[in-house]
Length: 206
Image (cartoon, rainbow, N blue to C red; front, side, top):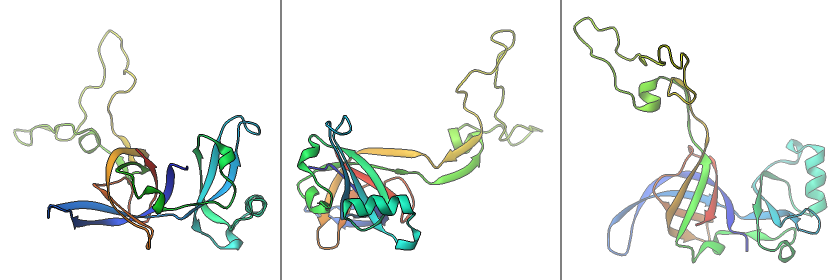
């Protein structure tokens, strides 16, 4: 069984549970994903499958990838990801991974790329405190001292400073899977997941 499925983040909404409580959820259009390659210990040294998600026109597929899809006997797909499995011999090219496989799952791990914030200062990036705003202070949003004097006479590695923020791989673990809509290929996950609308996410059984 493939424990991971690819999807597209649609947005957030709220639903009501059995106790009539409001639950904030993220709606993810997950799958169906098609297996485009199978790796086994005999051929590759480990067991894994390559799954694809998303439609793409044929003219946007280069020749090496077109040959890869043709060899597997599947339609071209926009996104490809490799997933480890226990036994690669149990899978074959063309197999489908759908939200129906997650019907009995209680919680999932969601991986995506967080929203990019650009270049940010220390207050926004690391939650630093600002300086006084009155009495002639000119240190409202400056980072302050960054090093020591005689020893070690340098800036230590890993010091929190201004820089690029966001746009990195983030995994949120143990999110409750509230609802699965098999007909519309939708998954409702409690809470927020990384990325903006239409962002690619990977959902793995926790």
